[in-house]
Length: 209
Picture: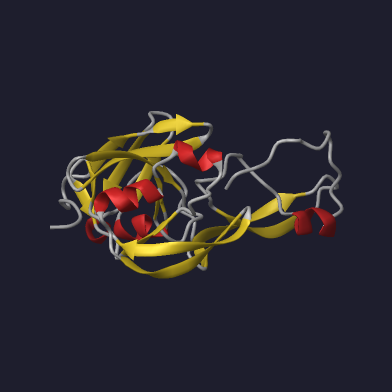
């Protein structure tokens, strides 16, 4: 059956790759993939080569909205993923465009928001491991602070206060994006609205996430 045992959470080691969390998985029992864990994606994605390898049936098309803009992508029936014994079969997955950028070829796919609806995902960055729990039986017992989440489409968001240089505090909503390669990014509209001044030169590099 899909999912995992309520009393036996699954522990997965993961790899940090340029600030991104890469999770190992097997598909159809044999194919080993490295998947980017990304709460910012509304749909799980696969490289076109694996769509062909797994013989997935096309079911439609969707528009993927990301940092680079909007792109059409084919939609296919979902394969069965195996995460060290915890299994998940999404209803559908999308394929990266065939002319996808070189940076995306370093990953076999993306685990989007559906993965977080299937499991309670505990990310232990210090020990580079992910623990998957059964949602129906999970109860948090740690010493951390629990924050309520809201969702913009499928992306989780948390409310916080930002203390400005003049000491004033402003409430703001932040997206929790595990696919972002920076610790904290402030939106341009927020910077302009509160007249924040840059303290360094403009970076020539781009951001991903």
